[in-house]
Image 1 (tube, rainbow, N blue to C red):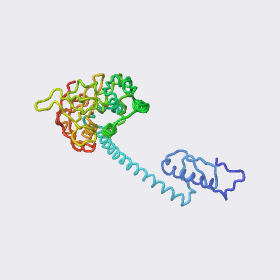
Image 2: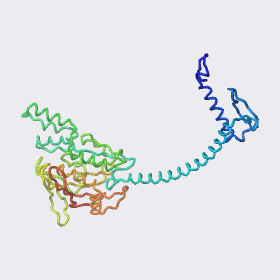
Image 3: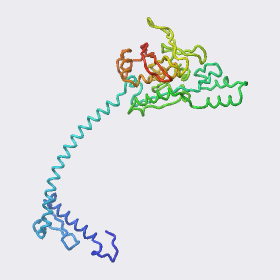
Image 4: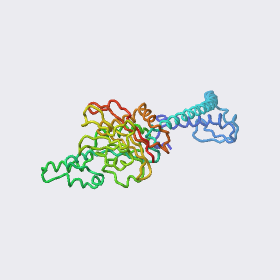
Length: 367
């Protein structure tokens, strides 16, 4: 059992003797406590390694016990009593911990409640895709021609961008950019803000570039589009549902929002910054609308410049600003039957960063 060699000496190695003594004490402890009513008693007499069996005569069996053994048995009985006491204490503690766990579970459940309007776009069991704008659409400036969604997906726009008058290096640069995954800082900042707002449900989110999406992808799921049609042509798919439309005076010119149906006192044009990084006012829209291409909802954050796009995500991250927007729209919060809306906001920016945000106008979108 112990793997001792044939010339094993008990005087030099007491391992066997120690274990047998422990076994003898355990047997005594058992038959003095839980095994008090046993009809068959197992004993291991001192000086022997052989088991002896007795028919329930405890006095005869343990008559030879030493004072030490008797003291051990007494401590054993005390230990059994204490064990029972501590069992009840542990049970009571378990009930208290269970109640605490239940309260903590309710706190966790509350933490899973997403802030509006993300509660309508990020839901358990449904994947939500964040689609970032594609900075390579800036190549339209070289061809002085807009790049519609169809050409963007088929890459036919490259035929018009590379001309015989270009140098080899210029053509190589355009080809490299057109095959790269590029986006702006504002897009990354907005996506990061949305992931943080999603909290424990951020695993429901995936991030993709505009060029990675296909028309059939929109047939199911929820989507968040970041950027205006100049960088994210997928936004143009929903342009007919929106009141505020992004336009440019010319290709790459100063952009503006056209107010299709102005309310009393509203202008027909909202013009933003001339260039990104300039100080002044920029405009953006936050829109929640049904996905007409399939089931689900769509959230669009589009600014005239990067400052406007970033400002839209900054507003959503601020509880006070979100409450102002809810009040301006008159939202009746119900994630299963959300209030679809469009909100035009104005951001005062310095050196590429939005400093203050105002809500300019809102619209309710009828599904």
